[in-house]
Image (tube, rainbow, N blue to C red; front, side, top):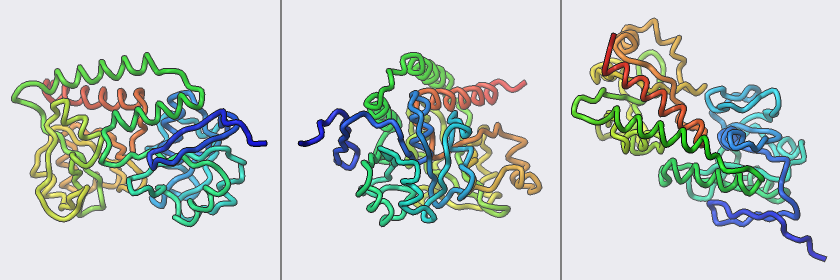
Amino acid sequence: MREQTVWQFSDDRGQLSTAGRRPTRVLAYVQAGATLWDHGIRPSAIFGSDHDDRTVPDPAKTGSLSLTEVRYLGAGSTLDVDTLLGGDPDLVVAVSYGGGQVYGLAPETAKHLEEHVPVVAIDVGQARTLAEIGDRFAQLARSLGAGRATTATRDLDAARERLRMLSAGPDRPRVVALSPAGDDRTHLARPRMWPELRVLAELGVDLVEPADGPGANWSTVGWAEAAVLRPAVVLADIRSNATPLDELRRYAEWAAIERAAHVLPWNPEPVCSPQAHARFLTLVADALEAAAHPR
């Protein structure tokens, strides 16, 4: 006799996952796990990518997720199927950057994992707007028992409107998004390639667009070239694979940027919940307001 389907979800690869009961032991990629946490869904465990530490999750990516309650299994190609299945998950929530590939796991590992447990992949790539990504996570969370985040959505709407008002007019503070890459260079983000930055641009924020050249997502330049941009606000990548800002303070070019600009933490792999997005927009709005009205 066939097991009755009680739960089902079609992911962004067009793959339908089904189960005889609603999944409760969710293993998730760290970005997905932190997003589900904000929706009230507690993952049983999380994993990272090859950019992450093998023993400690990147705090830039975990958001509000409690690491005392959620186990971290490791990262990327060091993970095997036995480790991933060790907690007996009944659902894996992964992310994809297009092409149907599960991000953060070796292809063979992902393939064998799907032979044992349903895997849902949410596309977080540049083809999607941040709102679309957030909607997909919200749909998944509701399928797992979450309610609608009414208050968080109102807070996000208010943050968007405030930022839109602050970005109106001709004298907008210049904003640069970058990822520090050592003492002699940095990667300048191409705003159109990052969903969170595209939201800022749509709301009127004056994001600096690097010159055309190599690099689809980033333009790599020296710190002196970055300083010439004279940004009023800098969104600095704080993931563990970026150079920590504390290490840069001994270099004159970065010190000059930091003295002249409001430097904000930025995670290019954002938690895609309305709460997290509202916090980010509020942080940017506060910096724009301070830059426009210096004391």
